[in-house]
Image (cartoon, rainbow, N blue to C red):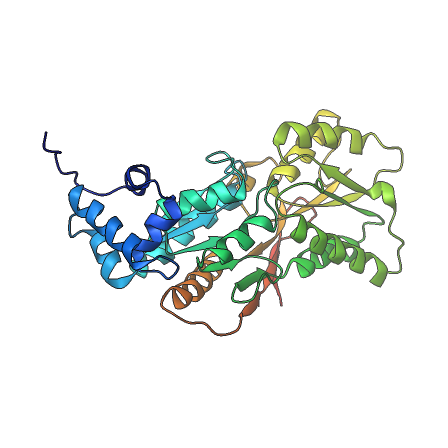
Length: 349
């Protein structure tokens, strides 16, 4: 019986038929090193047998690229990451690439399994905007080992991995400093638990918070720092406990918009007014914040600028650049709204 040719070749089918790993199939089709000539020819023969067509995958054989970028993004429950996805896709399409997005709700696998999936999808490179709780540094190491170009948001990674970071420490500093400068006698930090995906950035924001307090001659009160689970229900429960403390602070800088919303809801249900009883500022702007009864002051960043720089650095690696790692730190800016009083915007380098 003659097999009907398929419109395209999947790595999984070839791997099963040749008893090879998905990684080996992908490397053979992409012309990468680490595959013996006999194996490579066997893979190409199987590709022809399955009806390999001169489409995007065929161009990948010639150029060694599929023009596909993967974005490892944070949970869509945080609108900030929705903005990231939109701007990253815009940047990729403008440069002739398509974007695949992975979030914790879409995929929940061990790092090596994620790498296998990325290889199966034949991605040319990865932008890791947010790390997931169970991965942390493991995935970037696995990607580097497979030779997949990588750009991360945060602290420097392995050699050859470029970094486009936001000024996290400045975010914590300027948000806390603003609340103190306009007269609030105590400022707390309401943030995510220490076991969540971007713990590295949490540490920087906390460092900025502590630095602002110290500059104003204030001690860091342990009860003013309140962790919260990375979901709205958990953050809301933590907020109620936080606000019930006898020595709760007069103002709070929040890790992101969702935990700020949870804190403000808890305050409202407990009869506390904002900013009358509790002033609030947060990191990361969102359209949702404009529809709250009291609009929230935020420390925000230029996501389009980040997306364009991250995409350009990644494509440079995809096209063969093997130089030292590039580290760029982008500025954040303060947008003052009613949740802490006043209106306006102030850039922060």
